[in-house]
Length: 478
Image 1 (cartoon, rainbow, N blue to C red):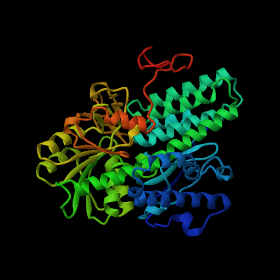
Image 2 (image 1 turned 60 degrees about the horizontal axis):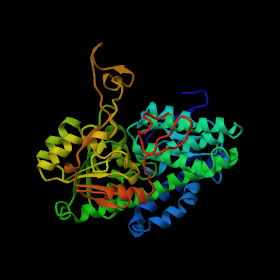
Image 3 (image 1 turned 135 degrees about the vertical axis):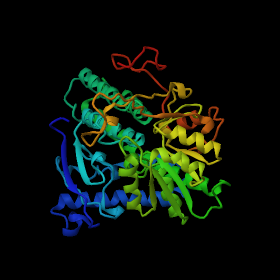
């Protein structure tokens, strides 16, 4: 991490109010930050409750998203917030006592360090897109929907820090940063789509013609819109998912709905609302009893550390399950549905998702248990025709060989650490998005929905930073 990155931590404590709220804000700046935290949480809750009433109103939501995101991200009062460390309140047992997964201020984007949860709430401040890329590589934050939003914010920060650069230097900086952000999360389609959209906005403004302040303002506005649209999209996705499980003959008549999930798909992975876990919350908010079986999700134990913690904050019962035991529980009919997120989705409905999903999908299919993928249309990879062309990078072997800085395998042990499973569309019962639930065979439905949601067709950026047409026309990105 660079010297410009700031961190601060506060141990978790049983007191649900946390020290900041128990004693009152120390000054006006802290009062504003506390108010913004409450706004985040209130907005997310309201969006979940009202999503069903706005399904089909995507156009109006998109038109208002930039203004909505400006409020969400604190643009109006961010100038009063100092750049540097700020200590969060302890999470305790209350969902209202911790802030969102990130917030964008005038000079930095502040991330909640997922590596330190659930023991500590630690913030990491990033002053540029390069800092955001490094935070992604170091797994400070994870979750494809979240990473797409953060990448947009990071590029906007880089534009702000490049106000005085010459036009050619500024363009090189922005395109280089966009590629660094793409490469920091190679599997995450939302990151690539966000960078394509940000660079398209740059081209519209005039990357060589416009001055630095105009470019910075335009990219900040686009980043705000990307975040705002994600919030409203995830809320609609949650409503569609809850409605699907309320009408599916296999789950509609059940009393308590038992859902098995793997991977981090809540607010920490989604930004403000989440995807698969947002559906769980929507089901609960509809008044239905729901119990969640949480796979521990190795090697980072995201299920045990993050998902179980988020569900506890939301007051939803959960039971932790060893990854290797989850398929056996499906075979014994101890779960009624499987609900997962996605890193990316191919045009034919093949899905790249957390390791372990393929086995769960096979067993769920064998026992006629719904296997549902919850992902925004920003996760659609319009370059990938099928799962064979989805990106599936290997993660570092060290993630398997050690944990928490401690070696857990004998020295010299070889390890392979796939970043995702590719689940074929034939094993997926439905892909739940903000535009509704899609089922195989998909034909062009997913691609058309993604295009309507603003996901751009793939392009290649040449070494001069110019979008030149179909992807792979010039080989690897510059």
